[in-house]
Image (tube, rainbow, N blue to C red; front, top):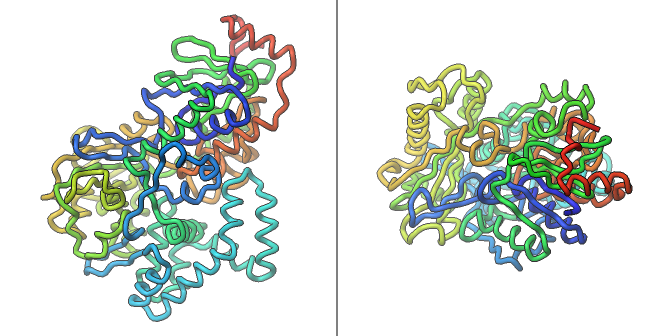
Length: 541
């Protein structure tokens, strides 16, 4: 009988399982898909000579995460690889904002867009140097992060702390206008804010854009050498070496609750897998509270709040095998692993406004990944393994373009993929002539690859301030503990949210380790479940 059952073998589930195994617990991980990884997977399905990542690709949060660093995954063969430069935002006129690996290089480049803009970027970096460590501690520890906040307050006494708080709450459009005269610095911040579902005018988008920009400046946007699957494989190897069990192709349909405590899970095949001490769920918030746990075991207020849960934007992605490098008009874009495609701040605002109105954007803001530029093992020399994704509405009310996209049938998917390629062509004329093969990952496809990616939502719920901190995932549930004793939320739905950094899984594991072992009566009940006692179901006490 395992001490703990972990539902889901995404990065958070695997981190949680590893930490429990480190503490001497026996752990069993059940994954619905036929392979582990969740949104951290790669394959050669686009073209046999090319490695393409299915979902996520660049991992600045992983590089900064003390959780993942402490696991020493280099011992399991994980190697990080970097593109020559971090991030590019080309413009249609051939100019290019560039986040370089060296701060001095970024500063020099921004100065060419506006006098004083280099100094303004350096000031943002100086704020990070003073506060970044404590901010990361606050990000990667359970809410409320009292120690990290206390250290930060002591470090930034008086007006310094108030100015930082104001900057973190600013819309990124306003932050860019206050700090920079030219477009480049503004676009670097705003494009990074749109890695989440934050419009340029949204409260808090400035803080998120600054955070991602500083992570890129100080840690880069690294990728696992050989493909995203290399990160997952390292976590799995580590777990196996510590005695953990991973079972793929095992869908969990129910969390068995007795006397207010989670005691087991029931699989789709009817098998009951007990968890003597805990059940940890690397699943979405709606799946946990709306499907896996019987509503009778939950407070009525929670069920009502669940109806107000908000997903982040839906996502549409295309993977390519390219026969040559991308022919960027702005040559500097060829040196960056990540490229943002929108011709100015107003185009970003127009894009997010169309999504808010339920329209498929006509000129989609695209995040473009040059994977061979970041990791030469991804494709043959002289070629490029590439992808781009954009955001779309969850509920389509209309099409801002001329394609009449109204859903995600085969024709709609092809039309949207063409539109995404047309956006790339605006900044790289001749791009489409380099395409050897492509794969379309529409919102339903992404969800089929990982049930946590509801409609292609990548971050486990909106990053907007009304669903962060004490409000994440729901009011009153800002910690990994749930209303069911022994059950812990270990997914991106929990604080601090999306991004591959392992904190939700680590927080859940540590919460489970702090909990006292169940009493003798409960242990007897779990032993009955292990023997197949069918009387103990989630619906009965």
